[in-house]
Image (tube, rainbow, N blue to C red; front, side, top):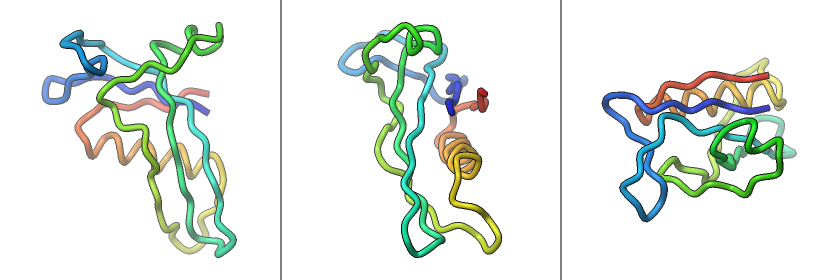
Length: 103
């Protein structure tokens, strides 16, 4: 239920309010499946790493967007975690990051 979001040559990751660059952040996802059966709303919370998240660290504010991603699923797609991960990965890649789904 997480993504590893990596900086690229074209897209840096900066800690909010600083010029400190990070190579990557770990994002935990939460999603809402709307009653219409096709809308999926996804939000991410970013952390320094998966280990930091698992040890109870606070959210790390960076310039990686954490706001809602709203998508309309294609016919036959499920409103589930796999769809949330896939659409989030695509969205962050469209922004220029390299993204890996972690299980």
